[in-house]
Length: 70
Image (cartoon, rainbow, N blue to C red):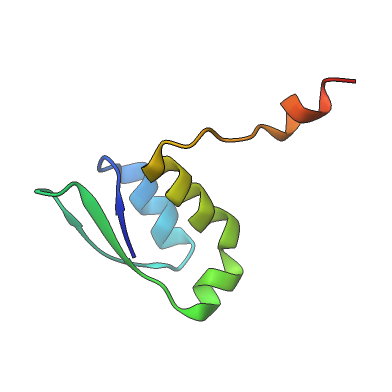
């Protein structure tokens, strides 16, 4: 999987702490290359979705905001 994000030591550390194979960061294209197994996808589904939302610039739904309307 390739995702276009600014390089971040914190993000790299988080990916590695989760045991996901961070292959490299392509400076020229500004992309992380991540190797995902089926187990990674099942185990880290929410985190992978978060990475995709970040790369696409999609707003994150804040669970607290959706519940505070009562």
